[in-house]
Every structure is written in structure tokens, then in C-alpha cells.
Length: 366
Image (cartoon, rainbow, N blue to C red; front, side):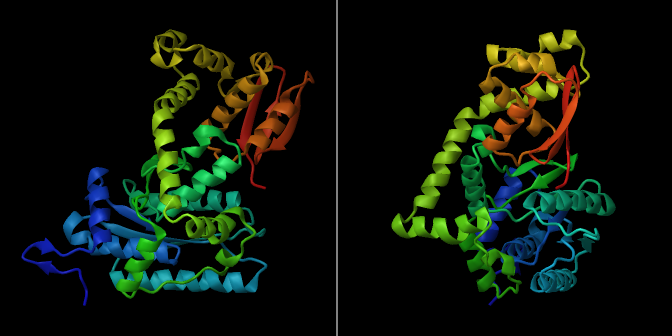
């Protein structure tokens, strides 16, 4: 029997729906239009179904967007993408909500995770503008995804700024005016699967998830299950420990993020001197290097190796690039650490241009 009933103006909700409703209210987004990104997998299907069932309570207008990553050299993967697109369309029709599909039409197939993510971001921004300019884009990232992201960034050596990972509400990289909502970060994959089975929902399985060559898939399919078997409850403890560390250093991270945004703004030098984010010797070092739209080459070369690495990490984050490793930062420092005249190079998926006075980077798809 369906556990969601309208009875005397009160809704009977499942535990997951209660938790989701509470999260939406805490984030103050109840009643706002929601553009839900649905891949067709169990996580996003469960999220869409829960949001649809909460409409009488929260009054959110809902639309669905599906991102089709286009043709691929793998026939089974291409068939899956078509099947997923059809499945999501049927689900949207069944729920009576608007449906949008954004399909990649480029000649060269999207291969890397970074390329796929860049296409998704741009497609989501475009669909939001088409449907409702004030809509939040909602994704089904959950607690397990959050832990995987933390671990991957730790392994890549991105430092505590990179480890900070996901937040429930943040700007969309492709358009900072659009907000991205991730309301499931306190809900685990097992809870979503239990919810989907209890409601007899239908979803499609991506065959590429079974390939353990990608680092995230290996963590998900091999390492984390082994950890859970050897040490029950370790995943939750590890995530809580990482979140505690992040919360302790977040004030410092926020000040440094404000510093970067402030220095690259068009404010006057007088305003800059009044800004509280310039306090501290380290902040002063960083602010002296930033020279909109890039970095002062002369001042960058005068820094220590650790300071160069830190400045580059902040600069990449500022231009919207958060998928880089410590090794890539080291390589960029090596490339920049010379007295040649003008030159260019590619690193961390960015095209770097070095003049006599300025260092700049712009995103470049591989």
C-alpha cells in the first residue's frame, strides 16, 4: 500500500521523505521551482519521486531534465543512453511534469569525466534558462557520493580546500547566477535503494558502473565494501571525521575565497585596503600576486614553491576548475618556473598563456 496519503490536510510520509522535506525547509527552498536532473538511475529516480510526492506539502513546481551524453564507440553504452532517455521521459509523463532532454551532438565522443561534467553543466544552465530563470537545479548526489569525492580529492593531493567537496546549496559552475541544490547529502545510497524498492520504482542500470577501472568506481565497488566488511560503520565515521576537519578550517577557507574574488573584482585600491580579507601575512602574499585577469608573473616567480602551489590552487578554483591534483599543480609550477619570454602550454585541462608580465589560464576540453 502506498504510504503517501492526503488525509485531513496532513501527509503521511516515509522516513526518507520526512528527511528530504526537513532539508528543503532548512535550506529555505520550499515553494521554489525545481529543475530535477534525472539520469534514470536509482538515485535520481528516487529523488524525483520523493519530490513529486512532496508537492502537496512544499508547493514546489517541478520539471525534469535528462542529459544524454551522445553517441559512443561502445554500442551497449549507446543503447543504454537511449533507453535511459526514454525511461526518464516516460517517468516525467507519468508524474505530469515538464520534460527536457539535452543531447550531445558533437562529432567527437565525450570521453573524460571532466568533459562529461562540463557538457552537463552547460546543458543544465541552458535548460534552466529555457524553463524558469529562477529555478534551482537539483541533483541526486548523496552521502556516499560525498565520501567518495572527499577520498578522491585526498588521494589527488588537492589539500583541504579541494577536500571540502559538495555543499547542499552552491552556485553552478557554468553560470554563477544559477543555484545548484543537492538535498540528499545526509542520505545514503542504501536508503535510496530501500526507498525505491519499497515504492516499486523502476530505474535503469548504467553498465559502465561495473567497470572498476575508473577511480570512483573502484572506490565504490571494491575499496569501500572491503572497508565496511572489515570495519562495520567505518564509512560513516570516516565521513564525519572529514566533515569535522572541514568545519574547523572553513572560516580560513572562506576568507581566502573572499580574498581571491575581491582581488579579481573591479574595486578600487582604496576599497581593497579597507577589506578585512587582506589581514594576515599569507593573505597579503596572495593578494600581491593576483593581477586581473590572471597572476603577476614577476611576483609569482618571487614566491617559494609552496606559495606558488597554493596561489595556483586558489586561481584555478577561482576560474571554475576544481578537478586538479597536487601532481598537476607541481607540473604547472615547473612549467612557469623559468625566465623565458612569452610561451604557452596545456596543463590541468587548461590552456596557459604566459607573457612578460601576466600568467592566465582558460579552460580547454581535452
